[in-house]
Length: 144
Image 1 (cartoon, rainbow, N blue to C red):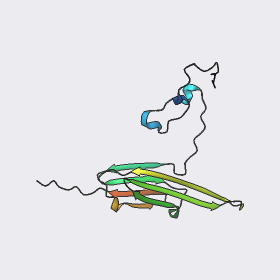
Image 2: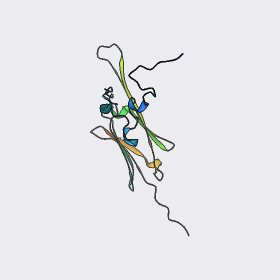
Image 3: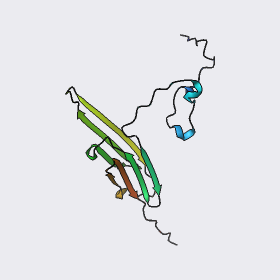
Image 4: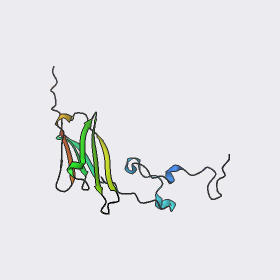
C-alpha cells in the first residue's frame, strides 16, 4: 500500500525533532522549538515528584527530592547496585466514595564511585524535601 504525502509537506518528510520534544532538553539542547514552527505542544503534566537536586562533593553524595505530596510512610528509599531508588505511592479514597485516587513516582540516581553506600541515610524535612545522604569512603593511603 502506498501513502501519498499531502501537498503541504515536503517530499523528504518532516524530521521527528520538529514534532517530538526531547526527553532530556538540557542534555543536547532543544530540538525544533515550538515557537519556531508555530506549533502548540500540549502542556506537560506536573509530576508528583517535580524538583530534584543531586550533588556529589568531597563530603559525600546528596539527593534532594521534593515529596510534598507524600507522607514519609508513602516513601521507600533503597540501594540497588550502583543506584539509589526512590519510590513514593499514596492512595486515598475519593470523598464521594466512588473509588480511590493513587499518586506515585519512581526515580533512580546513580551513586558515584567512592561513596559509602552502607552509611546512606534518608529523612524528610518539615518542608517536604526528601534528603538522601551518603558520605565518601575514606581514602586509603598508597602503600609503597
